Image 1: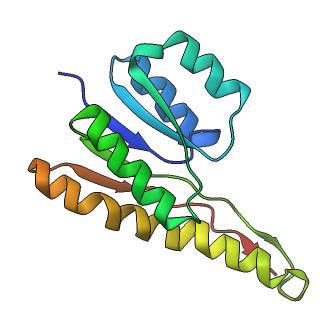
Image 2 (image 1 turned 90 degrees about the vertical axis):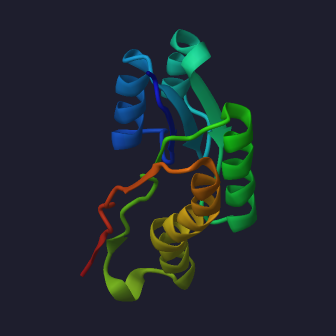
Length: 142
C-alpha cells in the first residue's frame, strides 16, 4: 500500500533524489520547495498524480504550520515527515553577517523544530506516523 510522504527541501540534492525515487515506486509525495525550479517541474509532469508541490520557506513558522495542516487535509493522512531542507554556510566567522548566521539557524535548526511542532498533533490525531530528521551539512566556519 502506498504511503504519503511530506518532504522539505525537494528542489535539489537528497530531497529531490528521495522524491524522485519514491514517486517512481508508486508512493505519494508532498514536496516542499522554497522556489520553483526546472527539475521539480519535470517530476511534476511525469508523476502529476503522485506529487503535490507546495511552496514553503522554513523561516516562516506560520506559513510552515499552514502548509503542514493543508497537506494533512488534502491527503487525509501523511505517513512520513522528512525534515530535509537546509544549507551549508561557509566562510570566516568574522566575515559572515548577522543576517547570514540568523537565516542559517532559522532554516537548519528552528525550521526543523517548527516543522515537527506543526506535524506532531496531526500525526497523533491520525494515530501515528514517522518523522525523519536528515542531518544537513551544517556549514563550515573558519
